[in-house]
Length: 142
Image (cartoon, rainbow, N blue to C red; front, side):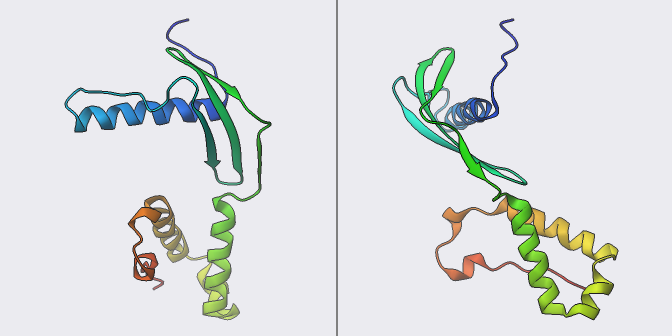
């Protein structure tokens, strides 16, 4: 069907990035739109998920419709955001001590802290960090 395309997740990420770029350019340039990807381009996609980071490298063979080929075999590993969460949890456990931690972890306050932590992770943009102070975030543990 011309209304449904099946593709692998890295290709879907490329299509989503291209669509987002066109939308952003349309807002900024009053309808003057340029494609981000051009025939012959080569690029890497890092899909940073919850459990893994998947890495693919593509070559653009066509743009209308978008046609990509993988340049090399996909790679990656168990480096996703759940490991960042585990490190955050270990940091808090060390900060609080075992007794306090054992009371805190099963509480509703823990759920609230993790919601704030998730917002911090999703809102993080390294381009906004000009110095060390930009890396600091407050999390209420009470």
